[in-house]
Amino acid sequence: MDEKTNFSFETRAVGNVQVMALAGRFDAYTVEKARGWLEEATADVPAHIVVNLRDVTFVDSTALAALVQGMKRSRQRDGDLRLCQLQQKVRLIFELTRLDRAFEIYTGEDEAIQAFAH
Image 1 (tube, rainbow, N blue to C red):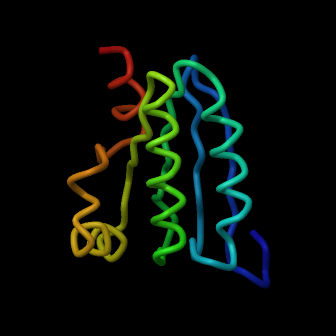
Image 2: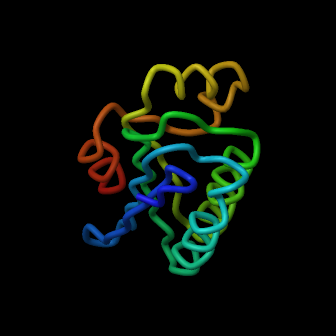
């Protein structure tokens, strides 16, 4: 984890699904790494992306915009971007912005990954 920004992310592939697990504050100061990875990950067709927010403690509008942009790009490439394991305070931000209606949100990472098989 980066001590200055209190943010980290890990990426991996599970079959044809790209997974990004974030931790810490996901905001204007930390969004660039995640945005760059999302651009690369959505280059594939189909672009199946799962973003695990289990260890994210805060999201701001810049981070939300990056996720929406990633979702749009993945859908343009016959895929989708799904979220999983949101902490209650992060889920509340999605509910207040009504983005909980735009994204498919899963309780578990495995559940989100398996949903692409259907």
